[in-house]
Amino acid sequence: MFKLLTQAFKVKDIRSKILFTIFILFVFRLGAQITVPGVNAKALSNLADLPFLNMLNIVSGSAMQNYSVFALGVSPYITASIVIQLLQMDIVPKFVEWSKQGEVGRKKLNQATRYLTLVLGFVQSIGITAGFNQLNQVGQALVPNPTVETYLSIGLILTAGTMFVSWLGEMITDKGIGNGTSMIIFAGIITTLPHSVQEIYLDHFVRGTVDWTDFAFVGILLVAVLIIVTGTTFMQQAERKIPIQYTKRATGADTSSYLPLKVNAAGVIPVIFASSFISMPNAILQIFANRFSGAGWYGVATQIFNYNTIPGATIYGVLIVAFTFFYAFVQVNPEKLAENLQKQGSYIPRVRPGKGTEEWVSKLLMRLSVVGSIFLGLVALLPIVASMLWNLPNSIGLGGTSLLIVIGVALETTKQLEGLMLKRQYNGFMYK
Image (cartoon, rainbow, N blue to C red; front, side):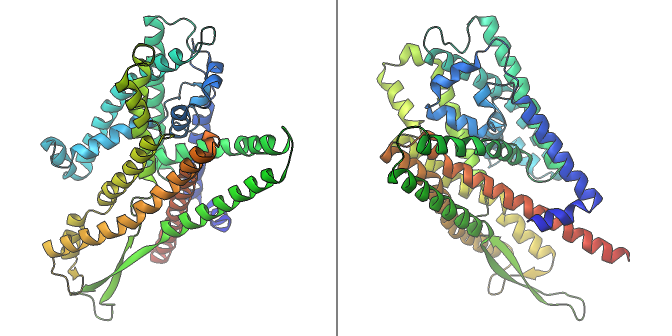
């Protein structure tokens, strides 16, 4: 990877993309340090063990811990993207029509996503602020002056911040390296790693008496990280090669090839989607914490949308599995794949072209997604289960999710860099 980066920096166009991405991430990290006016960010330290806060901190790229102007991060944008993509599945005819209009339709769908992000961002900002303020004790409130005007100003600032972060993500996707949304979350997680390592060191080797259990814990943690890194790297690169035959090829050209389908075609997007999706209801529930905290329905809802409980962890796992299947079919559209193969004069051996190819690819994608979804679910849930069984810190519970995002984004970005380098080599060959 370091060799690839060295080679990439030697190419002006690619170097510009990398430097642009770094600049955008620097702007995001700068904004993540600016606390929203009228908010006592130190009050969040009283809620450090709140699972919902830790989940939001991951999705926001660690901007939530300072209750900064970027505290919501890309969470509303992700939720809006999920809703818009779901509505394209023969639910809203206009969205279905736009999805088939190519670049023009994509721009319309992006605009609809931005409008929905605006609404969700405002609702989520008010809900989270009111909820966290009610959870704190008197004298340690998140909002010292909880008036309607204060909440509205905080909501507007956070909404403007999330729209700006979403725009930064789009800029990275269009002009930089990698997927903008994933890169912002990736950068936030990376910046918290030194602090996490320091906390583990202080807890086990500085504070209190050091004994063999501390060394055993750190050893087990290192082994778990190594297994997750190795397994995720393997699964992200594992693929099924589908043989392809061509009916019309130039004389001397190969008449056969293969089409690679990833075992986990959805990548780490399902984990990000599930994290964002389980955070939104919890944010709304925080608004009614004082009024309905003793009600039975409120207790059930809190259990369901808390990943540190058995029902919540189950829901989280189910969401990861569901989004894996959903996003795999978004990434690899069997209908369009079959149509493109026909246009190219190619076919899969022993499979009827057209509808037959579409059905065959759909079944294969379903089987591959079973493996991918089980893997993503296990890596995300095992640390959470371990945290519940042995009363470990909540940050350990989300360690699997964080590692999945970091490794997945790093691999996807590396592949994009390799593709740009390969494209340059072909262009150089053509122009010589």
